[in-house]
Image (cartoon, protein in one colour):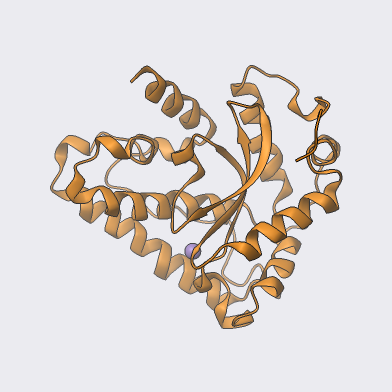
Amino acid sequence: MAKFLYCTTLFSIINLHAIASYPFKLLPRNYENNSLEPFIDSQTMDIHYNGHHKKYVEELNAALAEHPDLHSYSLMNLICSLQTIPEKIRTRIRHNGGGHENHTFFWNCMSPTKTAPGKELLILFTNHFGSFDGFKQKFNEAAKKVFGSGWVWLCFDPRKEKLIITSTPNQDSPYMYGLIPLLGLDVWEHAYYLKHQNKRASYIEAWWNVVNWSFVEENYQKARSCSGGKKIALKKKKKRD
Ligand code: MN3
């Protein structure tokens, strides 16, 4: 129980939107559907946000409606303590709570304003993945490998105090696995099929143009301060994976 409280408290400091509780709301994005053109098309952004994401929020609220004992739970409490959720609604909370969290995070991972990784992030990528290009290559490989529907992530692992690239199936959030996401990419077909059809690689390539590196930097700084302020970026790596 203590571990659970530690995790949800730590994660809620990092991800403030996740402290909200029932009834959950679709949060506004700070750009329009067409703002990411030509890299992410307007129709996909509209259907993805007003269709898919909105549905996750509605389904999450519907699953919780008849469980008033869970109405005080934050989104982070719900998705980090699935084993304590009544079995009858556990899968719905996992899919729709994860879907709400992941998509809220994903909108912030993109920006119509061109950004670039700062000096500290570049050092971080060099130390963990050989170079910035090395990081992108490994991230691309992981994104192409996701079978079916899922996500690829750059995460901070607070147990090992290092960065990792990983994927999650369906709408699972990295927080469910004790990881803090810094950057995430939705590789469900609904995220790209209208424009890129079956060519996931071309979607991934286009997406790099709209990555919000300021958000990644912000997430990294919060993860670092919550892990005791250690300079993980400057840590020498003994052995490369
Ligand atoms: Mn999606």
